[in-house]
Amino acid sequence: MNSGKILKDRGKPYKYDADVEKVQFILENGGFSVGKSGIDGKYGKDTAKAVKAYQKTYGLKVDGIVGKETWGHMTAEQNTYDDVLGFQQLLNIFGYSCGAEDAIFGKKTKAACKKFQKQMGIAVDGKLGRETWNAILHMETRLITWGFIVTRWSVQQFIGAMGLNPKLCAGKNTLKKLNEKPIVSRFKESDMVCQCNKKYCDGYPAGRGKYYGVAIMAERIIRAAEKGGKIDAYIPSRKRKTKGGGIAGGYRCAKWNVDRKGAKSSQHLEGVAIDIACDNKADLKLLQKYAKKLNVYGGVGDEGANVVHVDLRGKKSRWKYN
Image 1 (cartoon, helix red, strand yellow):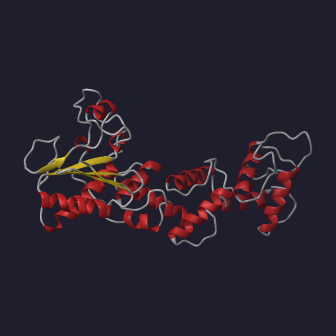
Image 2: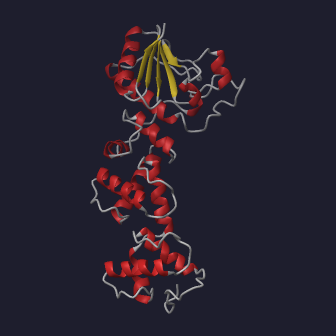
Image 3: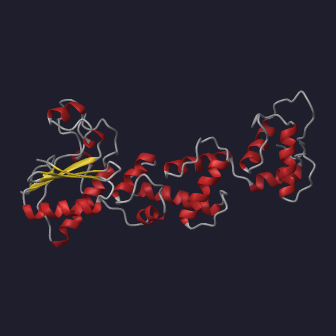
């Protein structure tokens, strides 16, 4: 809006004006309702009423007219469309449900913002200030540093891999884990592919990157078991160099799962499961012990004499195989 332009209620018929739309957007995001018509680019009585409420709140001349003073205050104090939209997207990704990602800072977004601020130890005012914005951007950056893509699925996989409840929002405990030095798993994507050897699929059709959370969980389990000394393990997809145990892969395509006589709801189908094999009974007991201890909100199955199953299904499940 140029400095000489004035926006006000000029009576019917109301005409669309892109600058009016900008003003309405700022008003709505600031908690000043522009009426049932919403952001429509038309300066009617409801918009004028909202402008007056805004002016009164901020100690401006109350005339219902958007001139140089009011517009200058609005643009200096309010977040942009992209700011609000980006904030909403990250709120939803980290589990702070704010509803529709529409760039409108409404009641749900404000409530989600307050919840996030409380979890992060920030002054709870329900506003997207610099401290709040920097806090959520920091979480995004740390998630990427750990090697995860920024999606709700990935956040849940990270939380589960840390032994936390993936159904909850990413709060202070998740932040603490994100701020730790990233765990580099010994398991690569090539180690986690479907073992049908491309008979039925291209190796990992379920989606690149899904395996990463469960690979970190497996790494945590094995590192815990190795505290008393290195255990004998190898990865079957590589040339075998040791004896006594191994990893039976992460993903299974549907046809290979049938060949393997896997469960119809197997977590291997989602690429979030690993079978850790070990012929050494003492080492196997250690793996079983730490799998149950660390994988708090996932599945752990004792698969007979030499295998322990681990998955990130999002809820605790324990079972034994015959």
